[in-house]
Image (cartoon, one colour):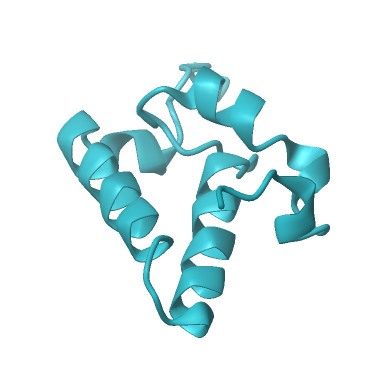
Length: 91
């Protein structure tokens, strides 16, 4: 008897979907957003960079980002390398 090995084609979501719960992703994004409003420029700049990286990460995309559509409209992908002059100042 000859058996042919045929792998099962089962869709498995990326591991990040299994590791990040809705609550943990929301908490991470909120904490990074809070750090992005710090008084110290270095912390604020680095936290904003991390926030944008998480928001626009593609491979695999970060799941469960709260209000992702609205955030992507506020902080579009093409603005990432431009810096603060891309957004209006709130003076």
